[in-house]
Length: 253
Image 1 (cartoon, rainbow, N blue to C red):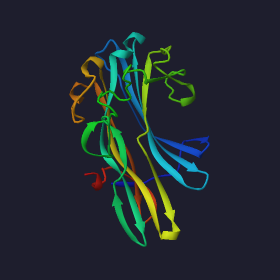
Image 2 (tube, rainbow, N blue to C red):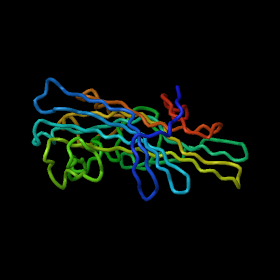
Image 3 (cartoon, helix red, strand yellow):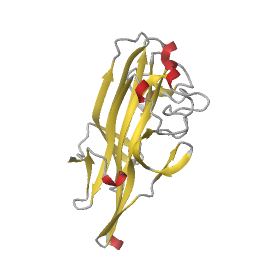
Image 4 (cartoon, rainbow, N blue to C red):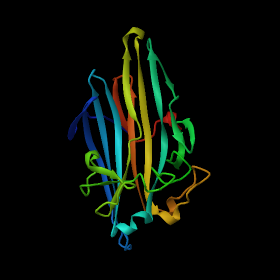
C-alpha cells in the first residue's frame, strides 16, 4: 500500500536553509509493571520537509527514543539497541529512459558499505550494538533536556557533560533525506529514495556485550520492549511526487 505524502505540517520553524515543516506520525509508550527501576520507554516519530530557498526540498524522518528511570542512579543500567532493514537508492531518468542505481553508502560496523540491508541487522556504525554509543562511555552521547519530556535541540545536553536533574535520557535518529533534482538540459531528473524499517529496543546494559562480530546478532530476545517505525520516501516518476509505502521497496530485497 502507498500513500501520497502530504505537505501539510503541524509545526513550522525556520533555519538558514529555509522553512522546516514537521508532522508527528507516531508515538508509543511502554510502562513496565514489574520493574522497580525502569519507569517508562517511549518513542516519537516525525516526518519533516526542509523547504530550500531555491524552491527545492529535502524529506526525512526523525525519531526520538526516550527512557525514564525511577532514580538517576539507574540510568546507566539500560541501553538502546536498534535494528534496521531496507535501503536507500537512486532513480535517474534521461530522455525518457529511467533506471535504478544503488551507489549510496553508509558507515556500518567499522566499514563503509552499500546502504542496503536485506535482513534485519543491528544499526550501529561500530561493533558495539548500543545505538549512538561512544568508545569511552557507552551512554556519553545520550541526550537529556533541560525541559523534561522535551526533545527540542535548543535545550538539550549530552550525558557526558552533566547528569540530568530528572531521570530521563534519549537518543535521536535521522536516518537519511530524500530529494529530487530536475535537469531540463538533459530532459531528465535525479531522485534519492528512502525505504527503511526500524526496531528500536531497550535492554538492560548487562545483557548487551560491548562488541559483537556479526551485525545479524539477535539481542531482541533479551529486550524489555521494542517499537517499530519506518522512513519511506519513494519518488514516483510519473506523478513527480514522493509517496510513502508501507512495504519495503523491492529493490531493497
